[in-house]
Image 1: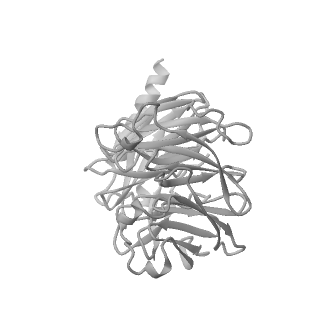
Image 2: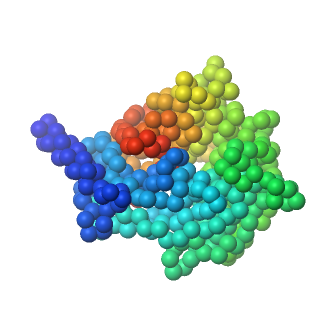
Image 3: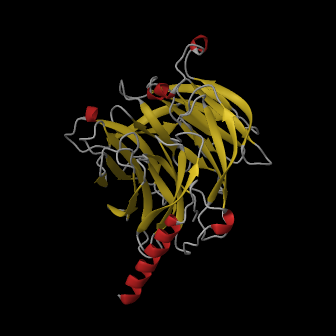
Length: 404
């Protein structure tokens, strides 16, 4: 007992000291980055209301989460992604005019807090809400448009714009709303599958657009627009199964998870399940994000409360051997501490607990600026750690910088 307590106290002291060492600009010089210990994993979050990116340190053994650094950014960054090596980060922003930004992730040592360095910005037509990267191209979408950019081979940042995707009639693009307001009724995401297909959920179109990926440059060829099974669903995010045979989608207006079979040129709806408990009014919630578990055996989805008086939920479903939901009823449901505001976004860690073999899920909050780490043991959720951003910053979307 004494050894465990000493370790936890030492870990907390290390994290607190590191956080206090952040400079005026909120960024560690590479030569002055403190050590956090080998167990600590690093994360990065954007916000909806500040021009900053926040680095966090999570210690799974000590069950602590601490703000470790703050980087002056390019605007309110509402969505982030990284490349496979986790040494480049790509971000959307609500800043005007519409842009995307790329960042280099640099570490002086494996246990040192990562330092971010701006690589470049890319101008786009309309404010984007989502970004996804492969080893050759960066895909983004939001409102009336989406983009495909090449990855610069030298810098790892944005290279040449290869393609613009349009989600309004082409003759209406010039007059279309291109601000962040258009994200409420336009395209809202883009994800690629292992089978060389891409999927874009469209809130206003109540549909999912399907594309094939052209080799070798990575541009997209339109295949079909697939309507949601219910009117006014508003598909918000989607994610393909690991084998690419299914696509899972979450609907913003009805808080459903839908499962589609991927056919050669279209999607076929197969299943639906509600994220919220039976008896709750779907109009009081806003469906948000969904992710596959690290093990691939479960699907997680989140929804936000429509007002501060209504808390959100994170639900989990067990998947069968083909990737379908074993039951329409969730295996477990977690009620979030707040409504989540515009967030309640989840991301699954790329590693599991070494002792208890639990998976970790991050959860961001836009109502109080909370960031939570949830544990998942295959049967239930448990809060592992939480922290709160300072100065009124409201967390938007978070990614894991540390790999397995």
